[in-house]
Length: 271
Ligand SMILES: C[S@@+](CC[C@H](N)C(=O)[O-])C[C@H]1O[C@@H](n2cnc3c(N)ncnc32)[C@H](O)[C@@H]1O
Figure 1 (tube, rainbow, N blue to C red):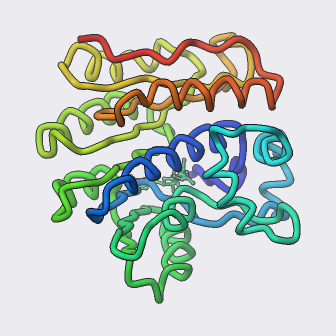
Figure 2 (cartoon, rainbow, N blue to C red):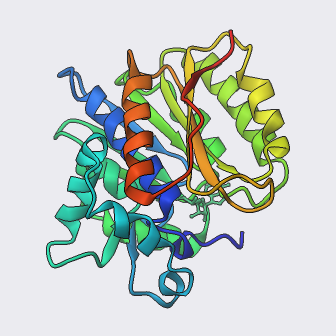
């Protein structure tokens, strides 16, 4: 476990992922019934953008640094969370757990797991006195299956693994299939990096053609060359009605804000 998200927090992939996450949670808030958000690979929760690690890559400056000053109406619920955490100017970046927590109502819950012992402790410290949040030192795929279906029967699972291991796309694909079997009406959002697309084949082999209701939304920061980290995507299972429109708006507004290349249209999973 060498991956440390502090180097990458607030980059273009985080901006896209968290803008989508916020819109999915807003959708859950449309009904009064409580819901749960399960964040399987939660990271630190808050990231210090003045840290040596963050400054070393400068990725946040190109991501949230640009997005915050731009017009991205489709990402406004997420940008409002970032602004709320940074009243004196951009200094800390909210990770998925912090974005999700900021958008819960008083009866909603967050369950988050993180396997790196230091990151787990940092995360736990933040939410120690928060009765709506449970933090676990546990493998994210184990967490996924252990907590679904939740008692609320409504909610969203974010699966955001580090892709350190070659078999991560296969593991993720198998986890999504198992999760849909256990909780067919749950909403799932699974993240992947766009570098060499051939490595993603096991993920799409599992979810395309499985009969799931779902969409694939990507944001490319750079033209793809099959080698470098060009962008990222999310497979969203059981998305809200017409969520393609919201995801497309985030994609195109972010493209304009960051000066990114042409994007792949948001697509539905193959039947
Ligand atoms: C991409 S980062 C998560 C970023 C976070 N979800 C966000 O959006 O702010 C992946 C995280 O997963 C953690 N991790 C690695 N293997 C894990 C596992 N098997 N189970 C849970 N967490 C794991 C890493 O320590 C890292 O913090």
